[in-house]
Length: 304
Image 1 (cartoon, rainbow, N blue to C red):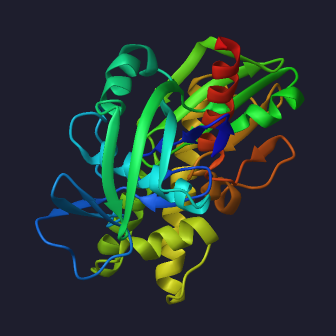
Image 2 (cartoon, rainbow, N blue to C red):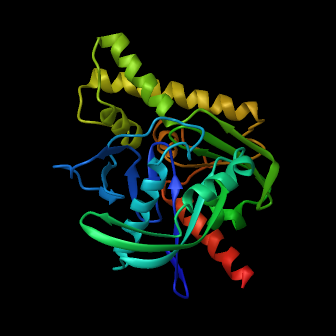
């Protein structure tokens, strides 16, 4: 979270698998209830309803404003950032993003969705929050994760921002994003998880918990027998090859350009793609949310 005068600028990366702020990561599942849930560490109360946030992952949807989930997760993310600063009441400027190829057509709709209430009161984990939303900016996903690296990106570079549902691809030439060379592929980490689960089922006739697969993808290992581990690793390597094939479709050539990999899928590159001094892994999954805050701060300062 950044502060300008009395305004709290909160960047929120509305991913399909996880919602990220500059300092927090929470799965996107939202379960409503008319009574307070007996368990859970992310309980939101809003408009007379209770919501368990972080229970699993939200399914892929192209329209993030199609239901209330991302709005509720936005409130949760703001509350978590404010709690870290010891605040429960604030004027908030939201900084968010959309996939590169969708931001122009969906920016206004998503902004209105996030700004539906100028003032709102809600409870999160038994603490009352009173927020006034004073503004919102929606930026293209992807290059915000490398804002602090732009100065080093001389020559031709390709950025692959691999999320849970999509992969955003962008060329950055001499530190400047190339607007005409941006694409979004529906080739996110969830596809790898599904592939690994199917591989385990096909080979062993066993249903495996997704959290085990996610552990293997994130850390390269899990507390399971070697035969299952080998099966999941094989599926991850196949997925990695598919990612590289997709990048080559957009003329990725490691001899002519450097590759920067960001997002939750960067761990798959780190663990299952042979290391190369031509590939840079941005392991901070909160980098995009931090980048949103930086851009929003610059935008507000220019307007004053």
